[in-house]
Image (cartoon, rainbow, N blue to C red; front, top):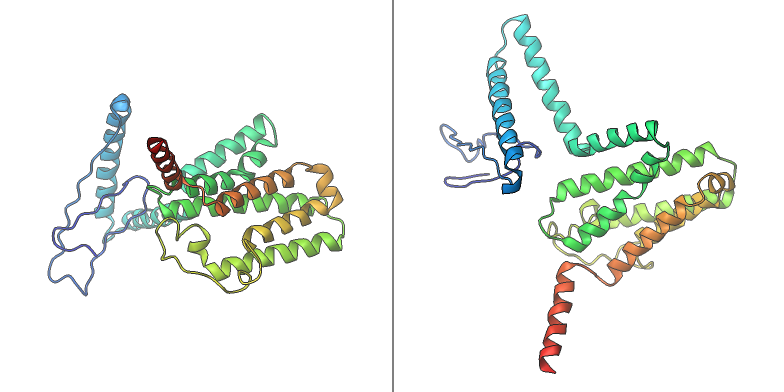
Length: 288
């Protein structure tokens, strides 16, 4: 809750936000000063000016529509109020669960798959979450945790969807394949449950959660159980002959990227650590 003199800054166009009155702490009228501003590099001044104009026009029109539909009396006003509420609800859900940028990207990739090659959508959305993991784990600076977690979960879900589609499409009964998928993803799910969803997505590393040693199953008996379980599950997909025949490289690339990220975690390779190594090396050189 903001108090007297407090301020908060956020991206008005891309961050979901809600301003409400805290009845327990606020007495009397709530006074909130909102300042809309645009920041941009000098080289992008024309784009920054255009964004400023469009944002300003949108904000004025949206505010006027909101005020006109607070207490709708006529049928037209009630319809307008319904549209405002429905649009707000859908926009919030899309931004929270998918992200507007991601939605545009997925539409463009889908069109490219239709017009150029059917595997474009498959390839570009099957492995993107690994790059998100690796890049975020390495950077650890100025990370919007909610957006990172949303993006990682979205593209991981798409990747699993691709695997499931080609598995069902080429399904023949294979007890070893099914057992690997069941055991592997059960292990990964148990690891996620033991850590919690936020710590699963680097909540401790990014400073979003307090670091805490986890000794519950499967961490008490299996090293890196989340990645190990996922790899076992992927081997289960690849074990099925029809799947392997149609998609010979899909699972090997998944496993290679998973192992790359596991190596990054094992050696705790990230930007701050790299800076530490660089400083240590410089110190050694100075001593010599």
